[in-house]
Amino acid sequence: MGKEIERKFLVNEKLKEVLKTQRHEYCSQSYLSTDKEKVVRIRILGRKGFLTIKSKVEGISRHEFEYEIPIDDAEKMIALFGKNKIEKTRYFIPYKNHLWEVDVFEGENKGLIIAEIELTNENESFVKPTWIAKEVTGEAKYYNSNLQSNPYVSWFK
Image (cartoon, rainbow, N blue to C red):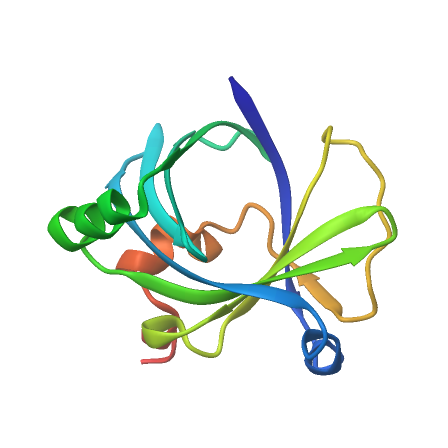
């Protein structure tokens, strides 16, 4: 059983220069099920497919089970069962002994950029890069599962 301990942040303009030199992959995903207790996600990251089941968030932690699946299966599941697809480019930025994953969203979520850091425990300390702005950990509207049904563009209507 895996555990995900994660914090999320919005970013500032300083990030633009950093992204130019970082490894990145295209990501497409859809949620097959979302409720208060769990989410079930299909993701394509680069040329790999994944099935992920996550429990309800408690604090900044939740149980996470992730399995690589054939990419053809992932594509078919998204096409058949996914309601709305989330598309983004994920950047991988090493900084001060941690790996930051920065998602630059496209489509209905274009304009939203979220930086995430996974920790080994809830009290682990880390250094924030200068491109980190406001923390949004625990703000449900920033969860990818909610962006599927309440996309960023709808926040301003």
